[in-house]
Every structure is written in structure tokens, then in C-alpha cells.
Length: 177
Image (cartoon, rainbow, N blue to C red; front, side, top):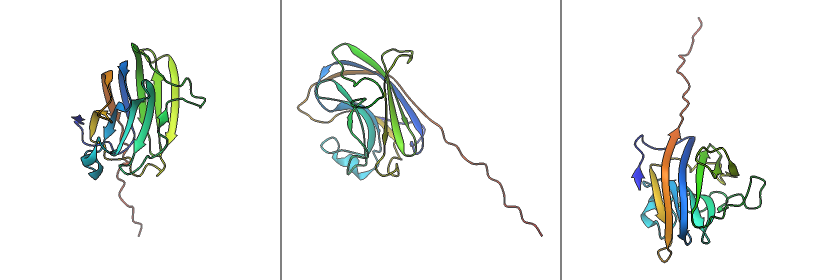
């Protein structure tokens, strides 16, 4: 895992990366985590506070967010059963370019099959069950495997996070006599 150089992600952010799939099992992925949360001490045997994109069922691309005590919205295969594109099932040699955007109450994952991010194959938005109140304080990017008895052969590259904080300018109170 790698600490963010600019503190924590507490508001809206965009997380981009490339994944190359060569083979593997269930539960390996990449995400942003709050390693100061008490749930981190049990990871990967138990879930920690995070938002991630991960592999399941030998090649299905999933997304999920977790509070550290429970799933915070749907954790399932990207674009499976919705109108946002094609369900993402990768085969050996496949590459995808992923853009995950987190806002106050939801997160969105866009998946492209080209490095220019011009051919969108999946666009999937999920809402946080708790309204997003627990989805702050992310301080590390983590490559993870959830279960020890699985084989994982994925490549990650071009990892980029950008965050925008909008702060209202201070306007002093005006007093009229």
C-alpha cells in the first residue's frame, strides 16, 4: 500500500488506473482505504473501510464500498443488469482503463477498453447506503487480495488520484448601525 502524499481524501475525488488481467481467482483488487480506522487491523481477513474495484469469480470486474462493518451500497459486477454498458468479464490478456469518481452520496465507475479513454464499455453508478457519511478519511491506495488460497495475476499501471476541494471564501459579517 502507498500513502497519499496530500493527506486524506475527505470530499469528491477521481481515481484512475489501468488493469491488465492475466488470470486469477476471487477478491484481488485496488482501492482507497482508511488505514487509521479500527477496521484496518483485521484486513484482509475481514473488510476495512474502502472504495475499490476488484476481481471476482475468475475475471469478473466488481466494485464495492465498505464502512469497515458492512457494505455501503451494492457490491457486485460492474454493468451487470443495468443500462450502463456491458457486464465486465475479463479474459487473460485483457486490459481496461478505469475511472472511479466519488461524490458526496455516490460513486461512479467508468470502464474503457482503450488508453485514450474514448471507448466507454461500462458506466455504473452506485449510491452509498449511509448517504456517504462514512466515506471520508481515505489515506492510502492499496493493492489487495482478500483470500489467501487464491491465485492473482493482475497488472496495475497509470494510477492517478485527483481531488478538488471547494472552499467558500470568508466574508466578514456586516453590521449596520
